Image (cartoon, rainbow, N blue to C red; front, top):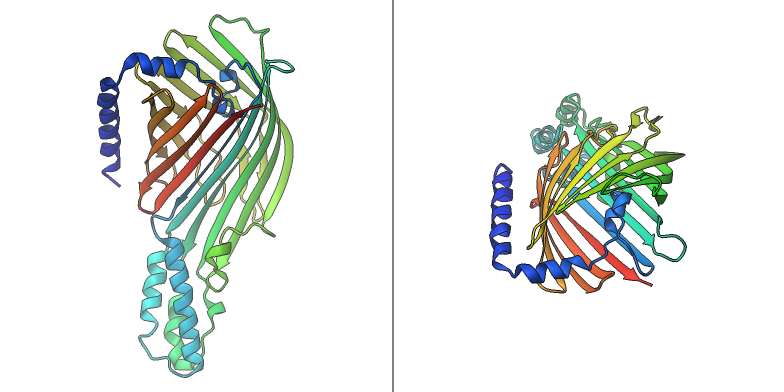
Length: 379
């Protein structure tokens, strides 16, 4: 993983050289007419002008099992079940427990994380071009394994007393997660008269689900590790976002303040979830050959249970390679979380001004992978 930052720098350099070789005029013309609604999900003030009703949908997912916790936990369960069976048949011999003990010890403090999201934006000039509607949901999960040292003497004693049950093992995985769903009405505030600046407010309804559970080895199933039923608490509330976008020549600077009304909730096992006001900054610069962007979370995402308050910084570049195709790449630096920095590559196809489809692949290692899609249709 230490090579990833250098890979990111090399990739950015290669993209810069590649861009200089393409035709600048063609790239500029292809980009100037595109109307993309996706930025509304991050900054409502960056809604483009529309001449028709447009719907934009997108989604993403990312799984980090770099430490192989999920696979090793499954192996530990199988090995423990095999030992239990051999004890019942009086085939258990001293030393048979050693592989399981070593596996449980190696699992201690290992972690896995998962995140996903989906969004929908609808905008058009039919009623009032100041308004846009969106719905989105995102979720984060993290699991860690807690090895209990008292499991070792239980396993070593099993051949002496000729008794061992899988349920006796106290080592377990602790899993935490939250999901936030939002339906928002965005309004451009034309009443705010600031030179070269657009300001928007977003009134939204939020549904918040907090998830916590402990998974003993005997109950572990890879298919239901993130099973939600019976382990969640749900909350509902209204909230407000405020966003601005300033354009100065080739520069565009966007600032978003999310969740102006703060609140605190308790999860099923007592962990605290703080919904605090968060700031996000995005800076774009339009070259003749490409657009370069910097995204920075000014405040961290909420921490909860096993999840840390991660903070993301993303450096990206998008370059049209023809009138229809656009390629992109980005490098994400993650602070205060278990995920490594990652690289993403994207490709999108634009058929009309308001119609396009795109896909993105993301990787930080061979066991830290994700993907995303984007689809925009005019009506």
